[in-house]
Amino acid sequence: MTAADLEYVTVARADDVPPGALYEAELDGEPLLIVNVEGTLYACAALCTHLDGPLSQGVLTGAVLRCPWHGSTFDVRSGEALGRPAREPLRGYALRVHAGEIQVARP
Ligand code: FES
Image (tube, rainbow, N blue to C red; front, side, top):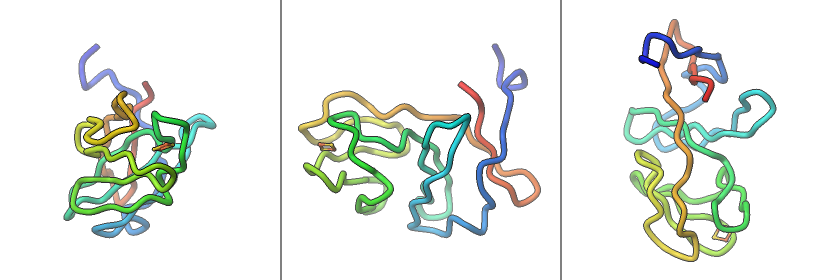
């Protein structure tokens, strides 16, 4: 599958996610997180890979998101788990902005 074959779905307006913001959206009934890192948007899973902590309530420092439950840290650009207890990366989603709307590709 190429990038051109991806099916994008609108999940939020770009205005909803200013720099430094975490925004919980939904794709096909699944929560996902839109994150604005210094003007660049990323989409990743909204639940921590440790015990499903709500990452929309976490703390974002630059590109590093800290889970509010037990403190795992993730790089939201790659999903990489940086700090335990989480070991598994966050799932990421392809994202684009089209006509002021944030669109995420269906996995
Ligand atoms: S649920 Fe996120 S660190 Fe435990």
